[in-house]
Every structure is written in structure tokens, then in C-alpha cells.
Amino acid sequence: MNASVATRTRPTLHGGPRKISVARKRAPSAAAVVWLALCGLGLSGAVDAQDAGPADAAGHIRTQLAAQHDVEISSEVAAKIARLPLKEGDAFAKGGLLVAFDCGLYQAQLAKAEATAEAARREQDVTAKLAALHSAGAMDVVQAKARAKEAAADAAYMRTTVDKCTIRAPFAGRVAKREAAPFEYVTPGKPLLEILATGALEVKLIVPSKWLAWLRPGAKFTVHVDELGTDYPAQVARLGANIDPVSQTVGVSGRILDAHAELLPGMSGWASFAGHAQ
Image (cartoon, rainbow, N blue to C red; front, side):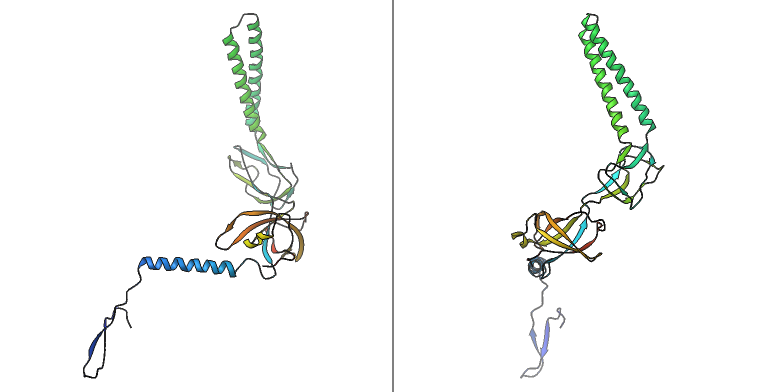
């Protein structure tokens, strides 16, 4: 029956049709719809949190490997790239050269600033000697000292700028992405390389919040890496700072014990805690 129909007929004992009033159907108010929706979401979230945890019955948790350091190297100077020796996938040692810029202009400015600073220092010394002989006033001494400090600061600024003309690796790792090329002119902030540390990898996983009753930093577990079909020993390093109120889960960070050259960031698998199930 259409909701807009207000009357219907049926036969009666007296003969002839008789009109029977039927209450018109009304759509629920907007407030009622919103209230029902919120109640439904709350019930659904509670059911999901209780029945659909991140671990299976055996306590296995999906996990992913991540590098301890994942860094994007950017330029700090405006200059042309003179050397960019590494390509994607290449390995490097800590302190190895990543990028070198053509900084002839900055080096010339540094030489000028250092010469100016040296002259200012000598002027300060001479003024101090003249003041001792009463041939220079106190103001002359103060001004000479200020000029020497200013020149020294200019030289330090240029020295720092020239130091930024080479970028060296802050840790041992590999190049994940190269975003520039040799002889390219770049400006400050231009991304050049993305590099990853190749040391012990971190293990990222999400566990039921009720595991916090027994899970502690230092707890041992095993990671089965899908790509290699191999198990590796691991250890909990840190527990998350907050619990997701909807899923009732918490993030956990662990680390693979020792270094394994075959493991790469982004590999995934299963983590299992002996003696603990969901």
C-alpha cells in the first residue's frame, strides 16, 4: 500500500461500501534518524571490538618490517650538483659522500670574509695598543672590538655555508630513491635522495589492547616473513602511547634481533608470541 493513501473500502453487512479511516504514515523526524544512526554505530563498534580482533585464535598478528631510519635528503644551498655518485639500490657507509655541490662562489665569499675578519682583528690589536699609550680613546677601542666581532661572525656564516656544500651519510644504508641528477641546479629544500638504514629492522604490529595485561618491552616473539618463508627472533621495543577506542587495539614496535642482509623494509608476515593466544 502506498503511504500517501488515506482511505480504503471493504464490504459490510449493511451493503454498500463504507469508508474506514486509516492513519497516515509519517516519516521519522530527522532527530530520530540521527539518534538511531548513532546507536547503530555504537553497537556495531562494540561488536567489532569484541569479535573481530587483530589476532587469530593462535595469537598470530600481521606485521610489517620498517627501517629504523627513513630519511629524505634535501639541499641546504642554492648551487649546481657536482657529484651524485649513488643510484637507487646502492649501499653506502656511514660518513660516505652522498652529494657534492659546485660551491666556487661560496668558497670565494668565505675567503673574503676570513680576510676581512683577520684585518679587523689586527685593527683591534693596534687600537688597544694605542689606547695603552693614550693615543686612542675608549670609544675607538669599543668600535674596533665590535668590528672584529662582526667580521668574525660573517666568516663563521660563510664557513657554515661552505660546509653544506657536501652531504655525507648520517648512517650506513641504501638509496631508496634518487630525485635529482648530476649538473642539475637546485635550490634550498629541493629533495635529492631518500635513504634507508640497513641495520636491524623495526617490526610494526597492532595487538588487542587486552594484551597490555602481560605484554611488556623486552618480550620475545617470532616473526615469520612471508616473502622468505623464514622465522626470525624479535623483541618488543616500545608500546603505543594510546589505545584506539573503536577497535580496542594498541600499536607495538619491536626489532629483529641481529642484522640479516636478506631482510628489506616493507616485507610483511606474522608475529607470534609463544604461550599467548587471543
